[in-house]
Length: 146
Image (cartoon, rainbow, N blue to C red; front, side, top):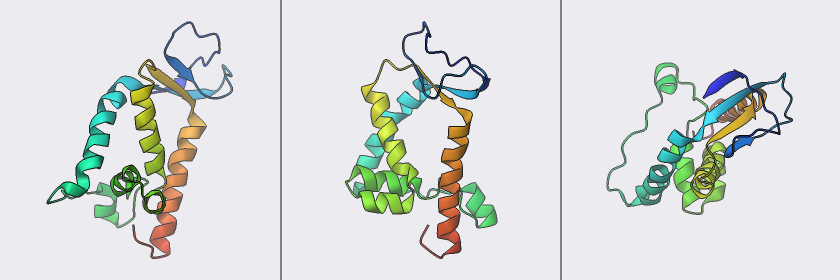
């Protein structure tokens, strides 16, 4: 992932590069290399599909929550992806709304195999993680299950 000034021009001569946003040259953007994410998408979907069949579930430990007691933006993501892949969208959204986004992105990565990189505005990345964290903190302060 590269952060900085990225020319998000609509006339990009590189096939396989997906540009999201307005295309202004002066905007900060994040270029995400999709190759390693694509390599993880298939195994993630496979593990999520067989997760309920495992006799023992390995603990998923959050370093932030373990040291401070405060949930991170990803708390509930594993359980949310497992719930979503098994069709329990309500439970998935309650655990972590980002799980549905991650699942949709993983499927898109496997289907859209020609995509090599993705360029998104930096503000959208900050807004996504900020929203996830605000939701987790809301659940934390109101006593809802994390």
